[in-house]
View (cartoon, rainbow, N blue to C red):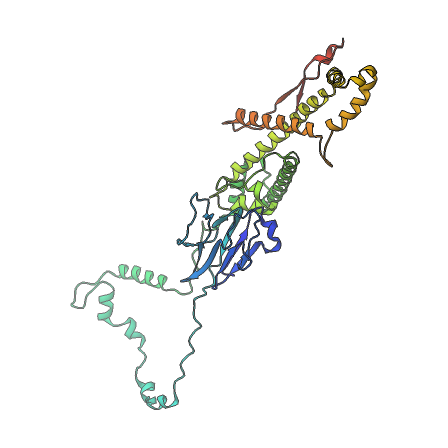
Length: 431
């Protein structure tokens, strides 16, 4: 598989199992039209009929932009543009409409290499032209003295000269000879590659430092591999829990038609956009951050958003509940009913006995809701309170790294004419 493109955005669900596509030297086309090699369903029509093409030239893959809305690479703000093909490398990220892709290029296979030429067979008549005796006696092996005993050769090699200049000392010749023998020993053990492979202890030290844990707090007999294995498992479960909470938050926002997270050209959060916890974890640990937040920034943003959501959810429910209950206030209902009776003179004589009938008429309107949803008026009150509270939190928190501080929520109970002093007091709820 020389080239692989994988959909990494939420639109992966639209194509089912076809979220990964491989291209060979034949290349291919990508777009919304049915005659493309890779069809991307897009009812909103951000994807062109033929949005891009993949070409293979001179041992490399290139992506050409053939769209009207543009192909964007690695978080760049400007599209690739027609007539400007871009070479693809492993780790590149591509955006077409709302689809985002990750690139993998297999560098181990060269598609342009021709098959090896067959070995030439020497005809039999060539052998007849060669003097077999000449091959057997043409060169005699040199004697050992010819390599090591010739005085002129030795004197030239080890410090003297052929014209009789003074030779080097015996000690100097010995050192040179030792270096030559050591350098030319084919059976010498390979040099140790210290520094190229980090030990388990060094990895553990790096991990503990990043986690804010002192090495002295770890038992000396603890196995570094076991610690790292546990840390990996904990990280996986934490990411799975965070992504589950984010999906729960998205469901609440969808139910109340609140703003949802959208894909942007840059500064995206992999925890919010990944298809599953494994993809999110991979992007956080080893993924490129061209159009994504850094790992720490991603986690901090999610922690902040989840806390704000939890607090605004509670406070919004309290505010919406209080506003909704106020709609059933007896004095307010009586005033509304009186206005209704004034418009119906024939019912005026019935007076208060008609109030109950009017209440029965207005109740379905006030509590009208779809299946499994909150009443319409309650939902409106909640959305208004939720959005205001989140905006207030964001404004107060701007520039503050510590978003985990607890907040005190004030809940004002409806005032009533009562002698109970506790009924008119504010309750402070800390959570």
